[in-house]
Length: 213
Image (cartoon, rainbow, N blue to C red; front, side):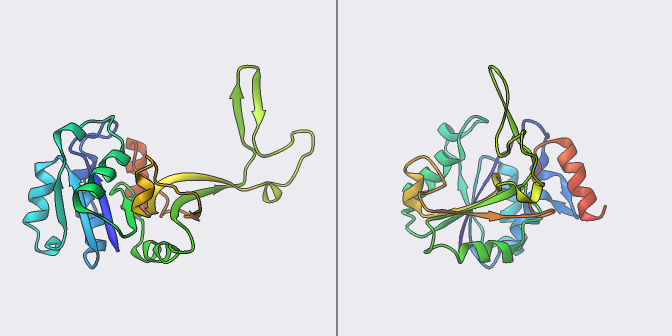
């Protein structure tokens, strides 16, 4: 499997989250150690990440990509990073893109999801919601997946699929359209703790608790 992992030096909401201790190692290494048997590319603007990988004999198979200066910044899309990777390395096989901020994602899950490629052109990690959902419009609140005038048990409601960004798997030609989801995707449900993502300080605390600390 070919795995693409973007790792930034700067984190807006959780300072230095990629470098914080998680189970005795930096968060980014916690993920990389799971993937050493696969073809891993880390796209980063961090000298600390590059040096940490270079000096770690357990990560000798991991390839670091120096992020181009024009692609450094909090507002740069991951899709732009992947497009640059595909063009630079002439990638023709399916790509798995993950974040190190999903620390409980298991290798066997990625391998199973990857096995669905061929039947689908992309596989997307998701949360499945079967609750009464609403959206806010200019005129007020509008139900999304239920009829307030006809009460149903939640298990009878249509499922709603929420991207959780734990992983995206896709053929490289899809990224040329500026997306990671093709015309024939499979939404792949994850449950806790695999679907946990670190985006806030509370998320980090919750993940540490899930780790058993």
